[in-house]
Length: 136
Image (tube, rainbow, N blue to C red; front, side):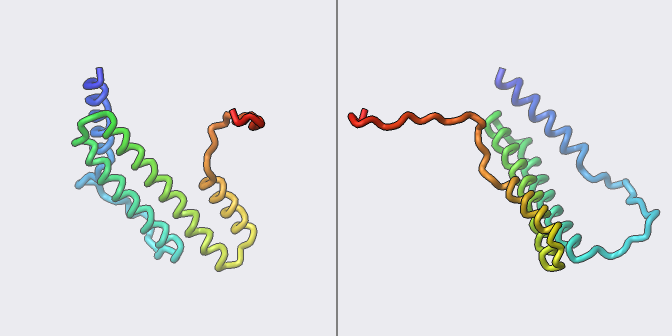
């Protein structure tokens, strides 16, 4: 059963890698004239491209994974990298908003980043019994 699971996961991921790979014959649409990116967008683009390259490298490693545990570890790392890239784009936006004095935008971004980086709880309340004099 585990072998079937491994094969299915590897086939699924391999098909995703092949379909996501750039096509050599695909022509980039050039209907719109390109214009230079703002400094903020240049930073965001660089951060996203670095993240995408790291994710692609990990995804290529899936073909060599020999167990479900390895596949799951790679998937967790891919998720972590994507989450970190998302955070980095918000951090870049926050830095520019602060520099430009856009206080309302700063407050929204700070709130968003705080919510995204706050430790997650399980949602199950913890009930602790008070210690007794006997020390249990």
